Image 1 (tube, rainbow over the protein chains, first blue to last red):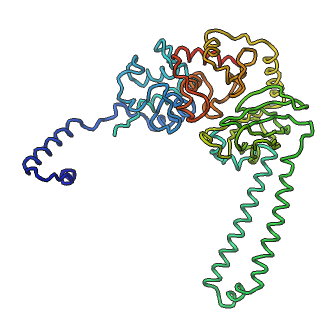
Image 2: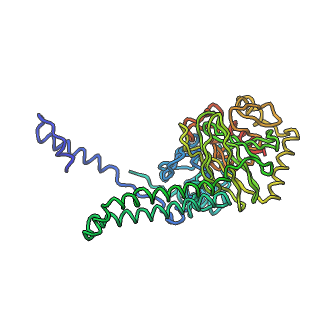
Image 3: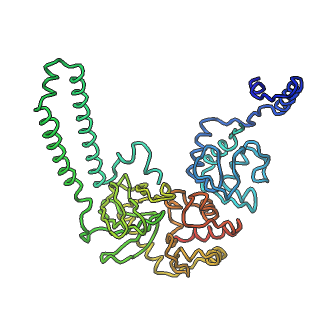
Length: 137
Length: 315
């Protein structure tokens, strides 16, 4: 345990130090490394990233993998693979996401996000990319 | 604009018109001569280090300095200078009256585009987009409203500075129809890297139709209306932007009379559709930090959408 050796606090009994170390270990064990719940086809996801860049999605959304722009008008899509509902309305599935990307107001009435001029295939590719984002550190 | 900077073949080596052809020829000849001179220098270096003593002696002699150090570069560089200037001389030829005249003014951080008639009067205004006919020369009158900018469409020409207080002429001609990215190639502060435009080359018949449609639109009243128009006016957009046929007559920012037809938004940086329009109006500072349009984050989603919908109709 390198971490323990680096922290040297003088004046504390070795037993107390051991106890503190065990507590830290127990806390660290609470959160197992998360598995991405959806693993998209790499080629399709790469295509999706191109679609996202060309359609200018990042004008309103911060999107992992897109360095510029990182618009703030819409929600950030960082950690998108872990969110519960798409736009707080639809179950987070790749199919729902593809439909939402192409015509958001049709699947979620009143949505701020307007219809985006992309083909169904492009929408599916973009959804594969977004849904497959695994940016847990 | 980004397709001006990368792609395969590199745009700068992929000329799409006669003037760009010349620039590309010049570039290749310069590169070839550079390679030859580098090879000669390397060979001389090898001789100086490892060559036989007799060669070394000759290389160190006075005649080698006179020939290799003065005569050779003098002759080659002078010849190259005259040839290069002759080759590219007609890129800056004066206006003869047979070309389409377009005045392009660099402003922080976008391009004002004005189509001129033979007498130099402004016929129509646009921004960040230059429409040209294929196979016909176009004279660009390049100006600047503030600092030095630079006009560069790698597919169509070399770079040309836009200098405050001056009008620099640049001829371009497209050999084929298509869309070519352009950029400001002189650092002009703040979001300089996000200052671009597109040049769209149309077949002559299509170009005439395009011109006709624009003039027709300018001649008639602006019949578009609704909540979007009302919000646009109430929010004060018209103080900086002009929309022909409405009370919006601002001159500080890009003319939005034909914004619905544009290929890009934000000076060549975003595709133009309702989504990016909303994003730009609501948070232009997040997209292009430091640009002169404030983010209209006081408008609601429904209001932004209404304005974007109205702007889409400005064609």
